[in-house]
Image 1 (tube, rainbow, N blue to C red):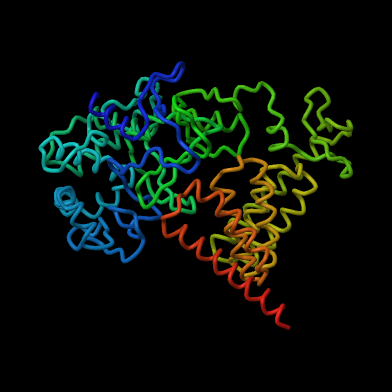
Image 2: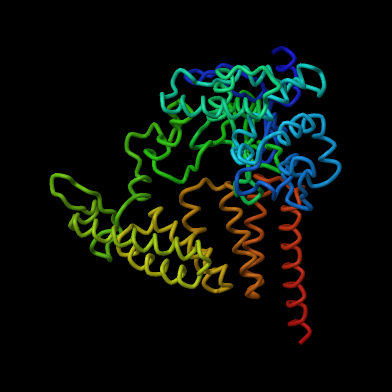
Length: 477
């Protein structure tokens, strides 16, 4: 542990005991917004079901990916990644080749991840592959499993999955109970690996990142480049500040956030969650007043069996609200079916019908209405209806700016999307403004060196050059 603490100290952080939380990561120097606090490769990682065969198992790149010619399961983007993983994969490869087709189909991403974890631990113990102070099996052993708090049904699932792992690695003398502990550790310590646009592509176990505690008002953000984790400060962090990231989607009500955090076996006590009455929650899940000239929010009062506006007192019958919600649910199922079959025209028209109903039902700040606008944006882009796409992109940005802090990757990414649409519509000045705002946020959350950020900054420069050319042309004529 001393070597581990020394390695962390060189990075400007340390592990400390946090009252009411257990251990956490604390800064030992000042950090500025955008500065990398932790950069770590995974101890073990695996692509998710949708990404299997599409991304490299070693680095998660999606370019030039080819399957291993022997096992036809592992994928690599080139000789360098294949070579870097060979000492581990040659053991895994033999095990996979020996499996029947039926058992190979049982190799889910989660089971694959545990197989990788077990093999890496064994090979490090045998000194076949190197370990480091910040990425070794001792750190994995120290992670909490919360096994004593896991329900009986889940314990049965873990036991079944442990048995599948033993079938993949029959040559190893594996303890099924210990493997069950691995699955429990993964459920509360692993992180979803996302691409630069925050789309999930896999899961990884990062020993240092797992020590960072959660907050619904975090001061840092976890972003991935390939499958490498980067924790960056999103605000100024003086020495002795606890590093905090969010484990969940924070654009939701307190009740939903607390529900999603139960899998981590703690109750969040951040400033948002400690509020006994959260006004933001009222609006996020609220209904609009029956008098559309009123901007108030209506809440259900059980004694009156009606939704009563908190601003003007207007009442709305609860049965009517339920009838409308039922109709929206039916329309949503119809839209989902249309999307799944690639009928984007029908999906768009159905989401438009949902929007019309929801605008009369929900408060304008409602998350339900935001979700519908997100779907309309996606369908507009699929149909290349750029004017509609721009309308809905701007509506989602307004909503994101209400539900997220000023420096948040979702706002930056949506501004980037908005800039690209404005550029397509030849709204050059608008595109420059959107690109600039996006860059101001994403420089902090994503850094400046990734291909994604280079593309954004190049787009901004191109838009500025075109605007300058147009301006000079007008001056000449």
